[in-house]
Length: 199
Image (cartoon, rainbow, N blue to C red):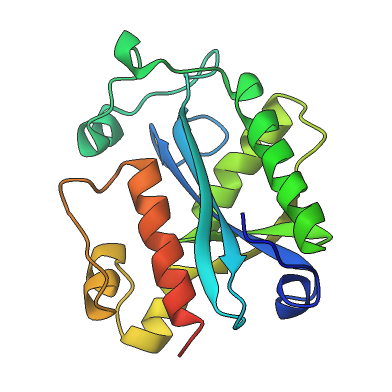
């Protein structure tokens, strides 16, 4: 983690720490459909004030009790929610640890809150918020409704909103075979976000 303080990162987004998030799910409904993967990249800032992708974390998630699993979504992502090799953990055993790591980074960087960055960010935020509510997690570092959407930013800056195409237009390597892994997509979104901030 970069060793800088609040006069840089905290001042860049009025006290918010950008954390890039991607989720893989078993459907589009955050209230009913299973959260299957989550990954997060905490953004850093170099000594010139340029944003860079920082530490990452990811986990496979077991479907919550009663979760809906849309077969079309599983076919799209290629995820078998019940594959024992996934070493998946429950939402309540995964998110609090990630949130603790984010809060530590906030303290180092002098930030008062984290803000979710995502490609189609409200989708990711809705699933994170639903899991928080479902598990009565009280320590979320994220702003509950504000977010930075790289699909919107890429549409404005590059003329395209799809992550793979946006990355290629920005001359960021993108492997379609690795896509739809939460960690890979999060890392690429973090690279794209950092680059878009220079436009």
